[in-house]
Amino acid sequence: MDIRRHSIHVFPDLAALNAAVTERWRKLAVDAVNDHGEFHVALSGGSTPRHFYEQLAAPEPAKVLPWQATHIYFGDERCVSPDHKDSNFHMASEALLRHVPIPKHQIHRIEAEIPEPAIGASRYEQQLAASLPRDNRNGKYFDLIMLGLGPDGHIASLFPDSAILAEHSKLVAAVHVDKIQAWRISLTFLAIGLARHVIILVAGENKSDIIAKVLGNRPHSETFPVEMIPSSVTPEWYLDALAAELLVDTR
Image (cartoon, rainbow, N blue to C red; front, side):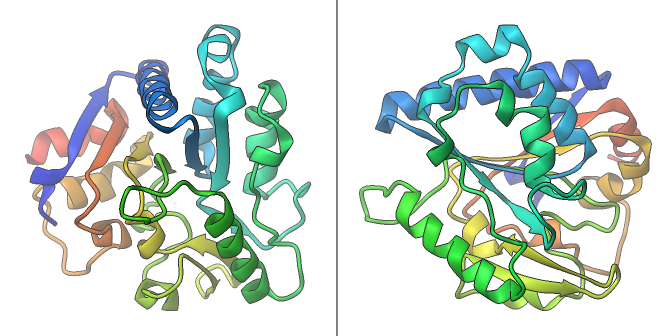
């Protein structure tokens, strides 16, 4: 992966990381609203994003952000009910959405609880087609996609060795993740390529090895899903010192 097209930011701790990403969110939201009247952002699941969402919902950030013009989407979802403890929608609701004045019709969740995951994926692709803005070439786009990173290099529910990695015709697809024996619904690389901005939020010592492999010079034979992000996108990496500790040593 050519990291010259990546923007890498390292912060001493999680508090500093969240403060920086909050300011970046604010800047992108204001720019989007000034440009086309709305801010369209896809959220990630995971513990590190949850801490960030809680920061966004705090009184000071929340009162200056354009929530009335914000549309919320999801990068992926577990095939559980929306009130299940493992649901990304449930996590985002608890940490952020119920605390800020986003109109309910502007929160676009994935219907992952229905019995057939492929139908849920198709319905979500239809939601994207109906709700995302168009650029001057009549193409759809997200203003921002937030991503986390798994220790195995997965983003959204794009896991290593899964069939969805080869999906290039759909924006959303269902995938059975063999390593965890579960169905997920996820944005595809085609959808990620529609993002004007992508932020990858990574924290914790357990992510240091994958960060060293992806962004440092630590050799690895496999290609991780995060390394397959389309070249049309310039990923912005926001790391805490623990996630970046081996990166510093190996660069």
